[in-house]
Image (cartoon, rainbow, N blue to C red; front, side):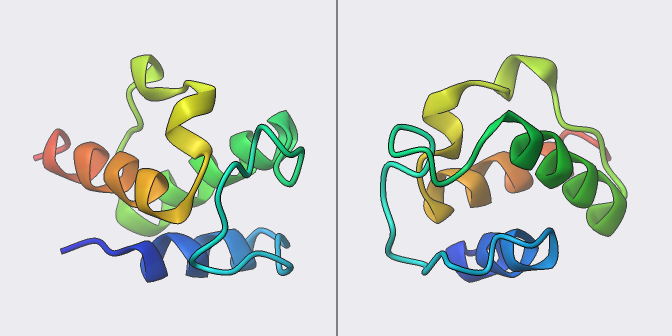
Length: 80
């Protein structure tokens, strides 16, 4: 099961180290930007050997670690 902590690990991996698992509004508050999202998607696809559906690339899906974990889980589930 993919957790918010898994999402946080990926965020830290791409250099977004000032984020905690409980942070909210990551996109709305400009904590993450479009480059971070592209790097995060690449990390998801590389680390989990899957493809992220372009329909999931929406600001609301990157507002917190729980939402990002759901993107990862969906990508993994749809890759097999």
